[in-house]
Image (cartoon, rainbow, N blue to C red; front, side):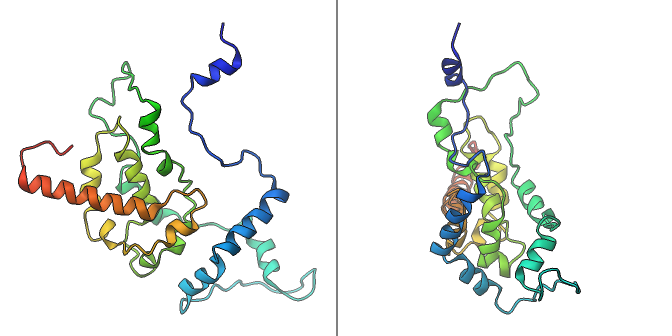
Length: 225
């Protein structure tokens, strides 16, 4: 009988540096240093310049004297609701799941090898935090842009050897609101906490979309993938 260590090796689990424990006292200084090194605060202020201000409607008394940023933080941090509908619609448009013609056949096993996993591991680390959308200047001026995270996850499934939905995804992304809106500023990759590098993913998708388009022009009867 296999011991526990041997059994662990039989599972194809994603490897990540993301900590399983919060460890806030250790992690907070690291996060503050990361934000300072990347100059995130100044960049976000620059992106939001000229945009409407967020107003916190509240009134006295305040337990700790005059109102300050901490007052807002303490009052709204745990209750703040982020509007995710737009992002979820964009994500759904790139079919972020494995597409197969024989998906209903549960008797089949679709084998993948470690090298197959490596092809899309980087994109699979996305945690949908939407920091890339907050940092993206294109999304700020063109809200219809599909955006960095959705594009990176599209590439993740296109690179998956079990998937058969690449053609439909590339058709969706080869549009004005798709990858061609991106001007490759790269801010999305700068702020990504998981090093997904969505900017590079979008450039790869541009290449794949162009190859698909040319293949369909030159070989209209050939298989798209």
